Image (tube, rainbow, N blue to C red):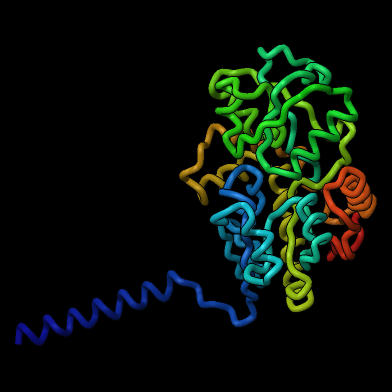
Length: 324
């Protein structure tokens, strides 16, 4: 008799656990559209709006089941988006221009950061005060071809001569601190600059768009032409949520940062906090991309040999109605 009651109690316990599990896990809505989004790099302050929207359930409210993925390599987001292996990816306007010129069917459908984060970064104790002071110096770069060409154009427009370009990969901070190079192109104004200053070194930078390089969208949301055709309403809903989340970040920065930290507890909080507040003014103010900005960068890319031929349109598509 005792054994029988033990079995009954065990069965009741299993039933309770199953019921609790069912209550905790909301049923999947058959109307939700699954979307995969690959970041451009590991989670960082650039991505705060995405995590805000995810943490607050805004994607789900718009019928989107969004999965955020981290790439294994920096080239993966663009390649996988072009192949349709992810629905969306965070990428860069210059990379989209290059990809389209090479025939890859990627399209920008939204903007995360609307001005360049990429700068020419240097330590203030190096004696560099204006671009001409880079003459005769060693200049590091992270990404071959693109950043080599960006610096050559920057040098031409600012009277910089007799410089030496040195490939440092992504070891930007160590390259500056060990004096392997005097400055680096490819460092972010919101990231490496703050990283140096947290280590006790004052850093300065030249913003590319203020010294002759066309203003460009640093971070855009890309998809493939096929995915755009197949999932256009879902992608439109994604872009709407993205701008809503960016607006929330501006209105409630401390709350936004807390939501991001909750989703990414392993990040360097002090660094990401400083980076986030430096990024706030640069997040997109609207999701209507400017054709003149795209055309200006294409003209620049052709002039300086970044691409060999004009890319076939569309480079971008505005999914929302024109915004004031």
